[in-house]
Length: 347
Image (cartoon, rainbow, N blue to C red; front, side, top):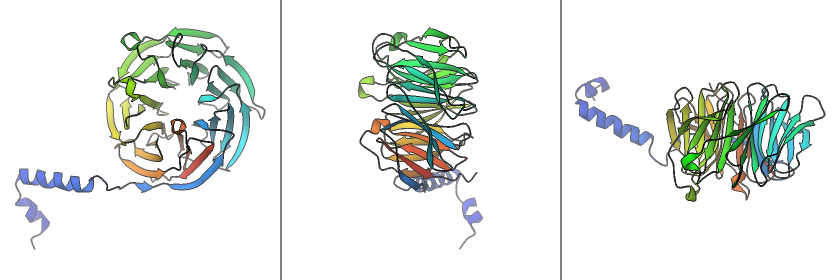
């Protein structure tokens, strides 16, 4: 048998290219999974009602869980117990934790609520009303200022509210022009230091705003038919604010470079993407789809781990968060249960 280097030397360039392409196809052929399996550590961490939001705390040792009945719980990922608990007036839609962990903002079915959690007794600091019939998306910008974006339908949808550290609120009108027909936000995320706010829309577009004045910076993605509900379902910034990740109802996960707002890669998971989250070092992204949890490598866009979730009935509420320091993925599965997955990053 000839040595391999002699065989390769006798192959033309075109033959070698075809050989390499065929080899790549075999390695990546459909149905052949090279992702490791996530370990389901606990599938029965129960809360008072359906889980609608999960955020990892600044120290990565706890996660903050919001529920349909307005309960917010700080859950210890290290010791596996429910700690501080407080109740909002209506059901929680979104959560944001300030960088120092001293405040938690909850967007609810109508108002947004700001809570001081710097002591053992949580205290409501403010309640910011939005237009009737709207729920609120929340996010911190700068050090301690809060953005509130109403979502829903009708009057008031094109506005955002910025609350400063003294409690003063400023109202912005968000530019919508040709997209006025589809004025629904699936999701909103803010970047603290770069003072950006991003909205994911039902028509699959992603709008980037300057959170200081509400000015539109860029529009990402391509418009789809909003009637099919194939919109941008979840958007999230990496902690270093170099990347933005978007998850879409039609199955795509896209990574964007914040420097030039160009796409880095996209992955088709062939299932509705319900939530996306970065781990703190921005090396991995965790994605919740219907009945599955996926871990994607940021550098390559490769799915490196997967787990099958025992989802509940309300799949629209499947949410996910990732603590690389604790090696835990927290996944709300659509009812009052939270799954805890063990994942150890080898890097």
